[in-house]
Image 1 (cartoon, rainbow, N blue to C red):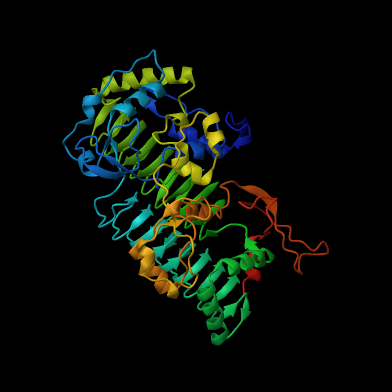
Image 2: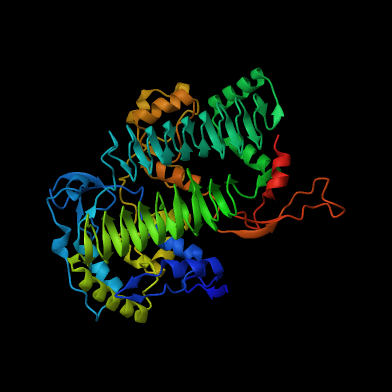
Length: 568
């Protein structure tokens, strides 16, 4: 039977479904012959996801010294961080041994407190980079990239700037979730697109501007919900000459006023309740090639099966709950962040090719480990100390019993224990808090002191053709926050190719603006708003669904059937 709960963090009521109860039973581990049942979560799905993302700084970079070599490096950790930080080459080398930090479990102290103490002693990875990248010093959480700058969680891409989650793409600036694409600017969630600007949820489009939920379109401006069209402007057939005239106007005068016009116009157009493609029995948004996934957001590539409350997961993930950026040939995971190739594990961050690991951080190719940090190819370790199999089983059973008494067992690490300030993490992207809110909750907060204001150049010509290379020497001032920023030669080259204006906002504010276009990761039960003929004498479709469009939002939201009928 499902159970109703009240979140101890935000007070919101939530339901633990029958499928959740079944999963908790399946994920419950056995230590020393005793099955330790996974308790029901104390936090709602939203607060649980916020807690996981609060341990991941993905884009706030600092100049500091490696605590091992003393050499200057770029790092996710500020110079005043309390953590010991090593450069990537040192961290992965045999020049230090994480086992030397091993400690005995103290049954008089909280496990979370002891883990935090260990975190402050063991060296941290400075950048979370993969060695397969080339000329990508200012990138994090990516691999097989080349010539990228301030590009985060990108894979197999080249010449990517100020963007996140780019896969197999090149020549991308200021984009979020660009796949198999080239020459994009300010695009969100686009696949197989080319030379397009300000597009969202588009597939197979080229030389398009201000498009949303469009497929296989060419030379279109200001359209929504169209497919297989060429030379369309605001969903109306146009001519090549009219298209080129409007495009030239945008390139000459900038895109801001047209964006305002488009944003008002598109509110009159219907919206698909969710992007769930080639999937069976799923709810959430942006779910592809999946089965039996619920309350999930961003299940990409080869999909997932029997997952719930997951974000940015997929690729053959199976039987997972409350995971973020995890999956990738994994099974039976609970409350994990940044995981691949793992099996039956819980409460771990940055885990690769490991199984039966619990309450760990930054481990690779490990088995049967508890409370460990920075280990590689180890078995039967607790707090980085080696045990025999029998010793391990008895000791972990003792630890979990004490955690049950303290209310720690079954809960992920508290946000207060994060190695990063809250406003430097992905939690701030998806669940933004003010400085006061962060401090009041006793999370870490850090003022942005990475930039030293100087006298800025603030007057820019909107026509990129009139902006010469002298702009590369100028110091600009963000019109939103006042922070100074510069234009690098690589992005200047792309602005020239795409004929877009020099941005008036700094990279951080541009990123915040993009994130504001991402709907909250929460589902609402609603009825289709379609009132077209064919719905009986009441005139409105009766279909109901779960959607990320909150009831108070201004958009018109249609069920899949009505939406497909509206597509041109």
